[in-house]
Amino acid sequence: MTEADVIQIIREGFITAMIICAPPLIAGTLTGLAVALFQALTQIQEMTLTFVPKFVAIFVTIVLCLPLTFQRISMYAALIGDKVIRSGGGL
Image 1 (cartoon, rainbow, N blue to C red):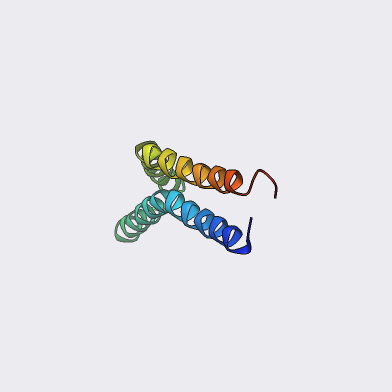
Image 2: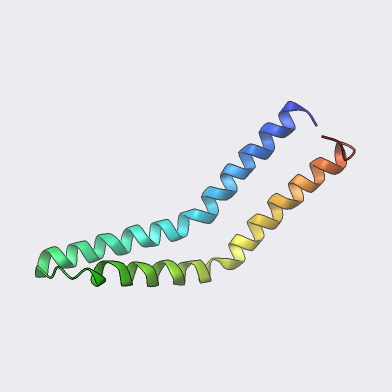
């Protein structure tokens, strides 16, 4: 396995992690912004109002993005498997 192969595996790992983590982070951020705006407009300062909507939005986003997550992880695992096979099994 060459240095270029290792760099490609690391790069693909970072890209895969960003693609998997982006949808829930965006959903949580947008929900938090909407709740903060709602709280500022109505002056309701309930602590559960900040956590429950974000939790629900992130959970729903994770469930909806499971096919994308599985596809990206399987592509990454196939890339690593291909690199190991090409290098003859030795590292």
